[in-house]
Structure formats: structure tokens, C-alpha cells
Amino acid sequence: MAKDTNHLAAWRTFRHMTQAELAEKVDTTKAVISNLETGARGLSDKWLRRLAPALGTTPGMLLDHNPNDLPTNVLETWAAIPDEQRDQALKVLQSFMRTGTDG
Image (cartoon, rainbow, N blue to C red; front, side, top):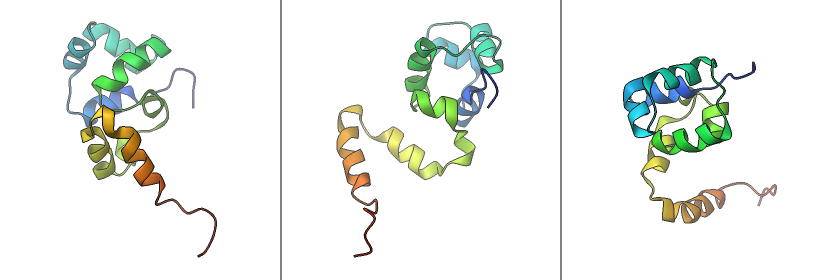
């Protein structure tokens, strides 16, 4: 992935938001959102922590995953889980993972 490449624009459109709407949610301007999306302005940790919750995702997902390449039903279900219950939900999901045994 090229320097400053991210999936911010894809997540914004996935959530059916305009640049202006996202800017309002994170208390900035449409121009700043545009610069972050194009890489003209770096997507710092500070910006990742501000933008991810507004887009119903995590900072790592903004950097590494285009939401259009992921199972939409899983993303929507996860986003609907209240923050205080996500640890429990993650443990339930992890219980379905194979442990390396065939039994």
C-alpha cells in the first residue's frame, strides 16, 4: 500500500455520508476530510481515533480494509453492538474459531 493510502473515502460512502456530514460529526471541515481521503494530509493516529467511531469502525479497518470487500452483514451487526457489550460479543465469536484440532 502506498504511503498515506487509506480507505477513508470508501468507509464514508459505505456509511452513506458526504464529506460535509463526516466533517460535522468529527468537528472539522469538508476540505480537511477531502485532504485526508486523498492523502494530501496524513491520516494520523489522532484522526484515526476521531474518524473511526464516526464511521462505525476501528482505526485499523480504515487503514487496511475497504468495506466493500468485507461481508456487509458482519460489519452492520458489529456496528449495532453497544460498546459495553463488544468484549462479550468478541469472545462469543472467538469461540467459533478452530483451535487446530479436528475433534
